[in-house]
Image 1 (cartoon, rainbow, N blue to C red):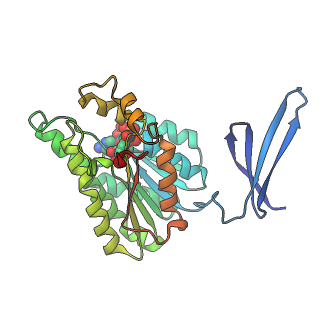
Image 2 (image 1 turned 90 degrees about the horizontal axis):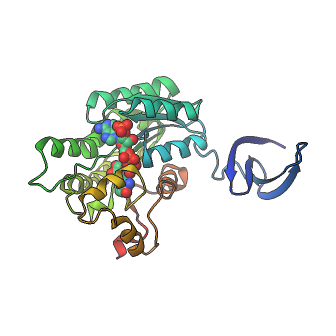
Length: 299
Ligand SMILES: NC(=O)c1ccc[n+]([C@@H]2O[C@H](COP(=O)([O-])OP(=O)(O)OC[C@H]3O[C@@H](n4cnc5c(N)ncnc54)[C@H](OP(=O)(O)O)[C@@H]3O)[C@@H](O)[C@H]2O)c1
């Protein structure tokens, strides 16, 4: 029997093995010498099932020192990908990289700088030999109504949320073409819905559906490019965003109550969609905007 005991995924009731070649699953109970009993779920799957979709593939993930980008990087790495992490916070980046261990690298820098995006691509190629996937999750809010917002904050927000997409994609194109690669960009429901005091954010996110359609048209069939547009997901950015509301202490409870799905989003909710879009299962999807919002836009 050919099998791989890695990754061991923790489940609610024990360890989760992944075997290859066979389909099905079984549960077994181990009695340890120390006297405790452990239940182990063994998931047996074919090689083309969910696990190891990304073995021998390389991904750059911007904004991977926190929140959604970090969750996506961890999920890709768990499924066999080599990951190139990015963010300005060197301490956080190094610590996540150390936790992931092999097949993870971190390059600190500011996505507003074209040169940093170029180095990110070069570093990924030098470290892992190819570039198959790019996930752009770096983002900033630039909170303040227009009369309160400084020119600098306006420009920084547009540069982080929009210009950086242009820079990183531009440098990644030759490698993504070669790999028949896939790109996912993090948009927001703010492209379609106004929030108090978020003009720079809504404008920068509002440009992304148009840019993604254009990129998809210009680079098909070699590179697939899609947008994922979350609503309220529990991350530091969401905590920061509520400062702009009149009732910051209540707004998240209120939002959660009003959402059709009756809860805020999690990083995993978004990571699942991103991984699907990056995978070969999404081989006929490009130029699309995937709203992942617990029903927010339906209200
Ligand atoms: N959370 C939500 O409710 C929500 C909803 C819709 C869309 N989104 C979008 O999802 C993406 C991820 O947000 P999040 O919620 O995960 O926020 P987060 O936890 O605050 O993470 C933001 C990430 O972006 C990085 N970043 C910001 N500015 C950067 C810059 N100039 N250069 C390099 N890295 C930069 C940060 O890294 P450093 O601090 O290390 O620089 C951090 O890793 C964003 O594009 C956001 O707009 C989030």
